[in-house]
Image (tube, rainbow, N blue to C red):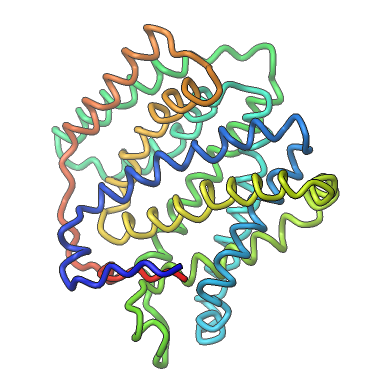
Length: 315
């Protein structure tokens, strides 16, 4: 399959926030489907299947090792750091959603990136936006540390790693493409951050294998489970991470961090639709505050977009 968006102005016509909205939808759509697999496959096995299936897609599509071979030691270290972070973050996330409602895990996930948003809130308007957004997240969360204490340990661990993902992902999206020509990139115009992401996903697959492969083995006897797991990988780790890269290339890190406040809202909505975890009136009030805070925020225009988002080619 090949989908080419070859208009020279395509990347400029679409605001980077639009890429984030796509990412936000799939960020929790995939995990909500994964929760349905927990009855048949071990949680760690589902995490392994998600990461490995995504790595396989990137390997077949982009063959990212070609870019990795051209990078210097610093560039390869960034790939290794992002890959290890993706492996640990996704594993802890699944361990958390196996014990807690998806909306609760989504709200906790945002708590760490509040610090990133605060670091970039340099105007009174943005400080007010951050305060309103934070209040909305707190309203949605309504955390009660009881019942599943281990679930909260995993959720807060995932939140800490999510901060590293935002930092490392932003560096990846805006990194120099590396020395030497890349004929494939020149021919297709694909942002080099996508290839770096693909290489990092291969690293993540290697890192997660010792802890997840054993739990995934029962799925190999059921092709339908493997197909479902592949769908989870595409929905959870291919589509959202690609659109994250495109959004990070056009947004300051603090602005992207604040937009992440929308994740609890999407977690609540998707949890209600897919898992029938219906929101309360308090959840709806919190969602309204989050939307108001994000709408109030005013991003600074980035001085340079180091990633060309004009063309995406698949197949």
